[in-house]
Amino acid sequence: MIRRMPDPSAQKVYVQVTAVFYPDGRLLPVSFVWEDGQSYGIDRVLGTIRAASLKAGGTGIRYTCMVRGRGIHLYFEEDRWFMERRE
Amino acid sequence: MSPRNILHIDMNNFYASVECLYRPELRGKPVAVCGDPALRHGIVLAKNYPAKSAGVTTGQAIWQARQKCPDLVVLPPNFARYLNFARLARNIYADYASRIEAFGLDEAWLDVTDSKSLIGDGKEIADRIRARIRSELGITASVGVSFNKVFAKLGSDMKKPDATTVISVLNYKEKVWPLPVQELLYVGRATRKKLNRKNIFTIGDLARADQRFLTAAFGKWGGVLHDFANGRDDAPVSDFVESSVIKSIGNSTTTPRDLMNEQDVRLVFYVLAESVAARLREHGFRCRTVQVHIRDNGLFTFERQGKLARPTSLSSDIAAKAADIFRENYTWEKPVRTLGLRGCDLVPAGVTDNTQIDIFMDEIRRQKQERLEETLDVLRRRYGYYCLQRAVLLSDRPMHINPRDDHVIHPAGVFNSPLKDRETPGKDGAP
Image (tube, each protein chain N blue to C red):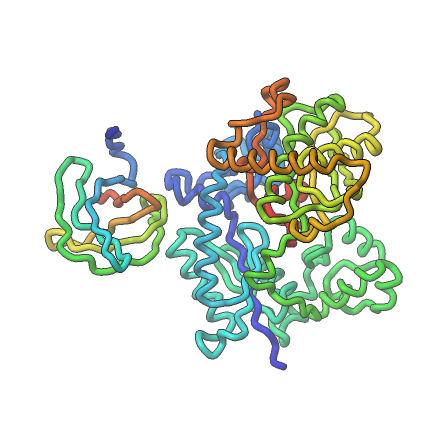
């Protein structure tokens, strides 16, 4: 696999995601790897909606997830997952 | 009967907005999406508001745009992405209307009359759709709400970006009539000039003019325009099925260099005919008429057509007919810049199987030819467009154009934009 060097100025961070396809068609992420290599488990998916990210620049299915007590947005854009960089 | 609720949705600066969504660093800077100058498609296809206020207009050559706006950011188009956004927008519309008529990629009419008791009136639905386009697609849209299609379209132009304009039976005289007459759909540059000569400058002037006078001056269209100006337009918003009815299949291309002689022209006709023929076969049609569109390098444009001896979906028949029409109608005063080819007068392929066989034509050979071209379709589907080509095309490599995959797109503004002749190389049955 080719891993691109992370671009610290970009607000769009593509992440590696482990997800489950359920028999009823749902697709839910289980964990993701942030650009520093750290893996985070997703404790709960609170909601999914189609949404654009003006900050990162893109649109996709947005998963609102709880990770270690914090809410995060994970976007599924066509065939890649991305997150917005936090300040 | 109570008035209809029709929306016209116009996604603002569509191509440029999509590009700016994906490149947050460009927002606020003047941006234009332009064709490829190396292929001589180097004109502005779309621009954002900063570029617009600097004087950049759609249809300008890139160098003209740069003169107006030296720090203009020029981006190549990404049609696959725009098609995807158009599809996503359509999915939103489908939640509110069963009848959706696309007008290019970025515009659509919706008939939401029947959704009134379920969701709300026209304005409410318009506002909801705008909010969803903003949050789900990250771009904005202007919506016109009215009791007919013509006024709905006018309305979407009145307030931009991201706004709803309502033109009702009660207020259309105040809102629409003071507008210049060229704002009305179908009033282009030529018609505007003629109307102005008759002292008609606003839509109100047109509405108050005597219908008989207009019919005498402009023929049938005079009466139609008079009806439009008075809000009498009962054209339905065509639904999914109707809009997919194909009336003709065409393709046009501006070649990377000017065409100097008949050999060049024949070459391009072969490429276009193969694409047209392949699409005719794909949809199960044969055409009875071939239409040729020619533009010389002085930008003089005309169209000619001719009937075929019998319906065909063979590229060789279509290319030969096109070359005949060209030869009869072109005098080579100037080199050719753009060529278009269209098969019209379509008949379903099966029906013609029992037409009269021509005794002067080798029918067996013809059937073989058909099977050969069908095989070509299969091979190209599996191995790509360039896996098999006519030897004649090898003589001039830079002329390689894959009209089928290169730009299957409806540019904005079918009626009054300078892009008019860059018609869809796809299914151009829709208006």
